[in-house]
Amino acid sequence: MFYIGLDIGGTKCAVCIGEVQNGTLALIDKDKFATGKGRDPHEVMGELYTHAVSLLGAHGMTFSDISGIGISCGGPLDAKAGVILSPPNLPGWDHIEIVSYFEEKTGVKTYLQNDANACAVAEWKFGAGRNPETGKCVENMVFCTFGTGFGAGLILGGKLYSGTSDMAGEVGHLRLVRESESRGEKLPIGYNKYGSAEGYCSGGGIAQLGCFAVENALARGESPRLWEEAGHDYANITAKLIGDLADDGDALSFSIYAMCGEKLGETLSVLVDLLNPSLIVLGGIFMRSAHLIRPKMEEVMRRETLAFANDVCTVVPAGLGETIGDYAALSVAVGDF
Image (cartoon, rainbow, N blue to C red; front, side):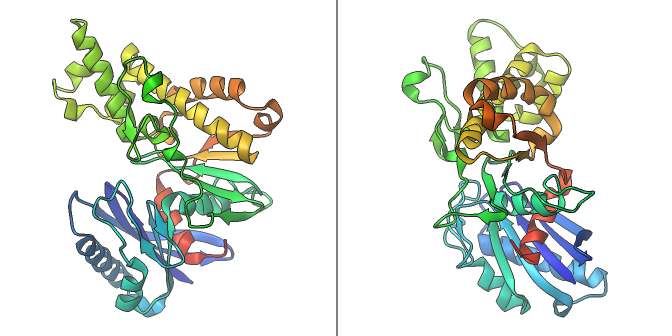
């Protein structure tokens, strides 16, 4: 059976085709394009449709060959109604009836899930949550996005838990530091909240921490390497640049990732004590920079969690690697979660 996956992100969108055979999901082909800031949502949806038609045509297929379409998108959204509500990383995407749009255009049953839930299902069924020898999947697992945004998908008791109004797992909205506790230091903003988990544990959050660190260094009369490598332009200070410099031994950049690791540890400690999972899977930046983040993260988790809960929980990078977004969208199309 063949499926189409649509992965809608704040930075890029992807369209892919996959096939399920004997319980295994295989990625056949994909295409991607920049989401574009300020673009009309219906313009982006039209481009998704055009890319899907093109991909199908390249493989001698039409929508009549497709068993389902899955859409993975940042929340908040209403999965049951098929409506994207107002994701912070997709300005202007307010009450977009995306499922009905694609069902009317294609005649194919279409499903919607937020990206954290979709990735959680993909990792649970086809990635780190599945034992490759026995084929069994873990019962209690948390997946955390760690890219443009930060959120969690929850697999509890062998089922996806999405909450009463599809808002379960929005851990990026948790406030970790209040202004009164900041000792005059600037707080990064994420999910429209200063000092939030997303403010510390996301690409944009790490970039903000980098900008703050440079500002402080310049105020002391220093010119840090991060500032030089960014060409004296704050817009060029990115999570990737900071990570590259940290890997090259830059102490300031390393300290920024250590701060991220500390706040990630605080966030995961809440999840461990609250949900008692056996597995936490982290995508995005953690897949590439776990060595910079894990030491502080684990130090905090040992200190903050109940030992009986922490001892049975393993934290790993996403098993599906850079293809997780594709498998996530396809997993929504396949269903059965």
